[in-house]
Image (tube, rainbow, N blue to C red; front, side, top):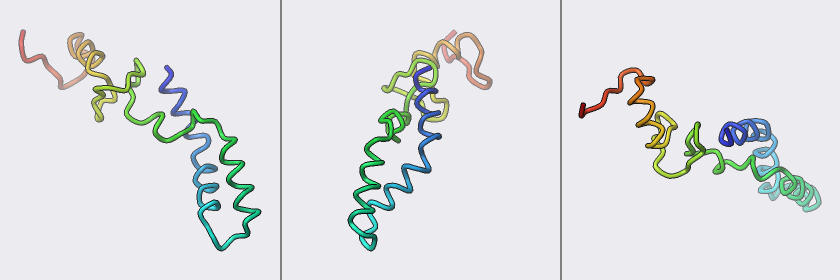
Length: 94
């Protein structure tokens, strides 16, 4: 829920954020232009940050113990595997 919201914001502002960062680090441009880009970068929403959406569970939004391939936390992964919703995943103990 919250993770999906953050991912949408990140995709919406990703290009603009990378362009503004490039302008602020380009020392060949005038100081006024770099300052203007820096203030516009500060006004972008913080939810769109790169590290806010990375490594979070898609279903619960949990940030610890997330399996990178599945993007599920260990609790959600266990429940989904137990119910048989994940193809190719079987329980070891029955």
